[in-house]
Length: 294
Image 1: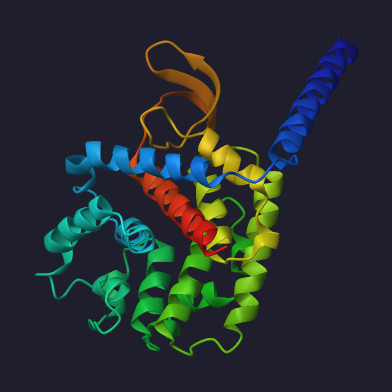
Image 2 (image 1 turned 90 degrees about the vertical axis):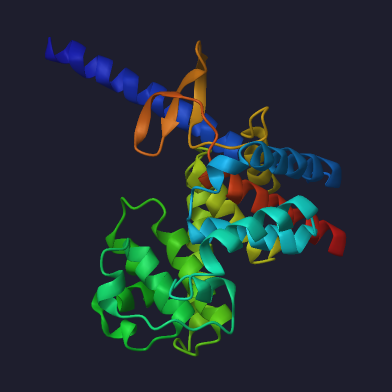
C-alpha cells in the first residue's frame, strides 16, 4: 500500500515538474521583437478600456496607479489620457492641499507628514511617502528605514510584490532628489536584477508579471527585458482591451476560468480591473515612446 502511494506521489511530482519545465521554457523562449504596430494597437485597446470604464475607475483614488496614467499621458500626448487625468486631478488633488500624495504629482508641493498620519498604511505606502516627502524624520522609524536595504524583501518571501514596491519607492526617492541614500544607484541595479530573476522563474502572467515587466522597461536597459515577456503581457490582454489578475489555464462557461491567481490556483470570474490595466497602459506607453526614439 505504501509503495503504491509512493509511486503515485512520484508520478505526480514528475508530471508537475514536466509541466513547470514547459512553462519555464515558454516564458523565456526566443521570439522576435514586437512591432511598433503591435504595441500601438495594444495601447489603443487599453485606452479604450479606460474610456469605457471611466466612471468606475474615477472612484478608485489609488495615487500610484493615477501617476501611471499621468505618465502615460505625458509620454503619448494622448488627448483622452490627458483629459482623464485632469478629471482625477480635479477630484482628488486640486482642492485637497493636505493630501500627502500631492507630492507624488507636483515637484514643488510640500505637505507636512507625521508618522501617526500614515501608521495604518501598507508598509510600501509608508516608504513611498518617505520617498516623496524627503522627510528624514520618517526615516527614523524602523518599518520605513528597513525598506532602504537591498536585502529587505529577502525576509518577506511571501510578499510577491515586495521587490517591485521597493523599487518603486527607491525610484520615487531618485525623482525627489532627496540625497537620502548615497548608494541609491547600486540599490536600484540590485533590485532590477532580482525582478529579472523573478520574471524568469515565475511564468504566471498575473498583475505582478505586468508590474515586473514595466519596471524593467522603465529602466531603459534593453539587456533586462526579454521580448517574450512583453509579448506575453499583450497576449494576456482581453478582447475588451483590459488586463486582470488571473493567468488562465482553462476557460469555463459564464465568463469564468480556472487558472493561477495571486494566492495559488482557483476558479474565478474573468473581470479586467483598473489596477492591472493602468499598468498595462503605462507599459505600452513606455514601449511606444522608446520605439519612437530609435
